[in-house]
Length: 329
Image (cartoon, rainbow, N blue to C red; front, side):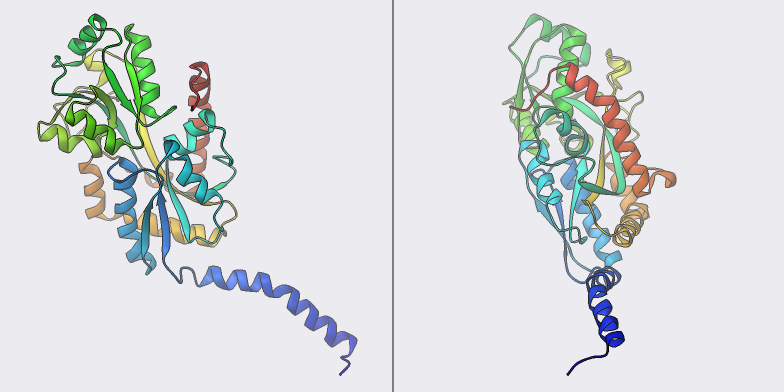
């Protein structure tokens, strides 16, 4: 049967619009199946802790399961790269941190761009690090530790989470500021590194409070200082680096939620709303605060704020990383 030209054109236009209508419909019904949240590090570290707390809360807000998938390796770049290549449909997300979305862009030859290949969703939390040591280290505070390092060049070892990680960068800065030398040992995550400090396999590491505070409180390791201007409310007995003898050695490890580039804005909005609801819940807020996390202010709880913060951190740290000649091997 031959259709009149007007009816044919009308049907053709309708068919051409189907993909766009279909995409809109999918976005409006999102989420209709479980969501995978990639944590690009092994279980036990800061990223894993906050990812699991976030997944638990977002599951309730979104009405769908949020499944954590730990994909460690290469300072988080393996798991992060998987999300960069995922379909931009809101069903694959990544908990990115300073390592994955700042440092790796300057230290690794990545197959993706840490800014352009992701859509920011929300700045989740940030926390300073603790410099902790094995009980076998013959020092009771940071000044004694530095004196011991000076008397024993190249005999001590510090765990890091790979080239360009906070621990690696802070280890290099510690050596530069104190005129000391010690080995830097790369691990796949903060969890394995802290386990080896507890076991006495390595002497020290810079590590997030969520991973280290339970061990400090149990008396399994020593804490020399926190990388901040002030002491932590959850650990008021641990000196700041300024008090302990290394003023200015400040660092805060932040975590944010990211989706693949091209994820529709209304899906990003739904994810942001669910994540904000989660970190604003009084019970979850308290759980995060107890582990040394600081929750961003209301003004910082937008996708745009996370994007701006990430870019500011890149502008601050890339020149330092490149000047230090840090490259992943």
